Image (cartoon, rainbow, N blue to C red; front, side, top):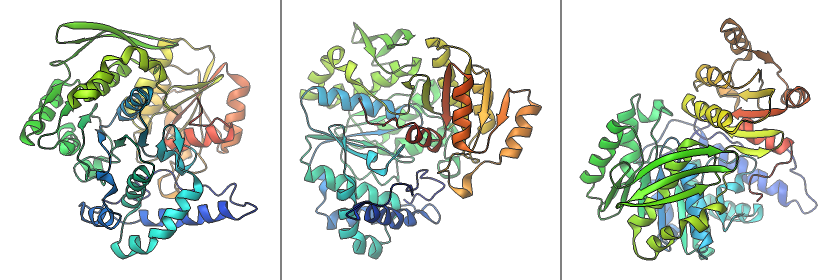
Length: 448
């Protein structure tokens, strides 16, 4: 499958490209060539990535894998698995997308991103093969991640689906367990315009003889995912609400506590991630470990001691007075607002918002208005030109709705004015918005 600029929202930055040895310049040149592979329609099929991986020696078969799909919650589930596995002394690879500030954040081993020099070297070495195969951006990036993990001799890798599942380039793995988190409306032009259609694509990661975890809490979607797992002959199949229960969720400034019941036994657990659904995301990660069995289930049994190590950049990410939280759809924005209200951060609150025009920006702004006294709509510098929202249209619509909106086109000015007038500044919307703000404010996504 390919992922054009309409799918991959983080183009290479042009700042900081010069260096005394030219390495930064070479890195950005390599990235520009890589991102040039994002054009065109969505190209279905796994044939290209399989052929590319075969030329690389099939590195994705060199280590066990946990595979995670979903619309909302997959990033939290990946982060939770990462903390639990690393906390158990394992060397862990983590592949996610998109990135916030720098491309290297996508490929991480034990919390340390792949270096720019390593990215440059891999792309340079394999560019002839990528070109000969017509590999897309995401196919190339996925192959690079798999190769890097093999060379780093990871004990286990956690692989996040890029888009959908069935035809995503990551769906060449043979996982220890495959988990699908909450399903919502996103990428409907590619996955379908109904939740069942979208869920069907996500369920494509379930495989015969492999543990399948169904994390959606919507009864209709949960049943559909369970049926798809059965049709794929996955085993065992662990289902939210049937094989585990999440109860008594309490959200506070320090995280989310909940009671997890499995096989009649109850545990009180706490994750540092803030939000009611973080309890369910945590439960999905734990179910994946239980499903994998053996030593992986033993790690799950030690969850209470390991969960404090969970970190997730750009999701309720606080650096007072700033709060960074990606919300690329209306459901995500509702979650951001509910978490903000539950934690009770200082008022007045100003939200700095930029959303890509093909997203439900009206729903996002309506949600944000429930918590913020003022909303500053602006333009993120790295937002792709063919997807930028029309600030004039946004401003007119918001005023017509009676929302407390101010339009400040210049991104740095928007951040400065919001900081000057608010006790808490929420930066939300696309990955561009949050990543650009973190870069300007020098907040590193992978810092502990």
